[in-house]
Image 1 (spheres, rainbow, N blue to C red):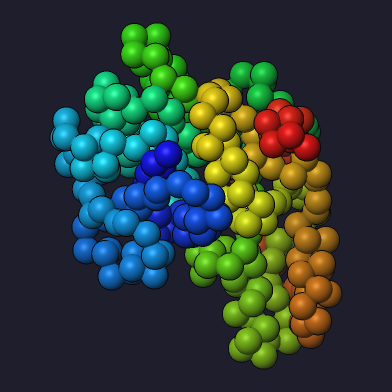
Image 2: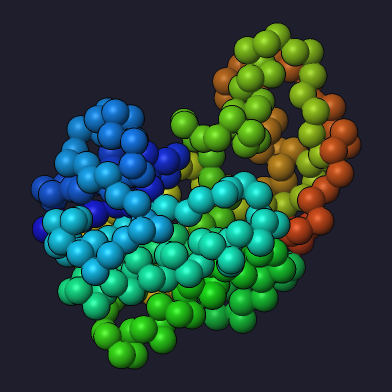
Length: 279
């Protein structure tokens, strides 16, 4: 079995490739032009690839994979940028359409919990998507386009809606790395919001393993939440990180306002994800 991974040198991609290496599969890492040196550390076959300029030969360039795990997406974490639907959406659909029409039979694409928009509480896959920012809108639109494509050119589709994630290699402006940096600088306190908002966090290791298991199943799961299913306040999450790592730093709560582009309390229903993993 051959599995191709786009965005392979990114935060999620590096962990997905590492998880794939535990299985007897051939791995092809698709990386941006000029990224081959960074990709060498992955220890797998790499292909430099300009997704925006992809042609009808894209499937052949990737080595005719059985499954594609599509993680690539530019411009994050600026969720409000119009480029998500003006640029990213058309280029990603065209790329994936060409692969499917050339023979790709199984596609795993990462979506986002922002597709649910401002809906609060427990979020189940059966809820209607109501995206309220350009990123969530673009991702959900791509999903709809792929579902229309399925009706004309059948293929197995798994749309993996990611909730919040953390772990090694995360972008420096994310919560966990910022806390680490503050500790390393010797700061006495860490500035954050009030921290009472409820979120759904899952480690990058668990997310990568889940995505790989879904990809290797060769079964399309349609929309599926990739989450812990357990709401936790951001304050408690940060306090647990501090306690687990035995860090000495105080929290300066209320320094930042709460984000206006997401509801105050929401988390994912994990039932479908657990069932797919046989848990």
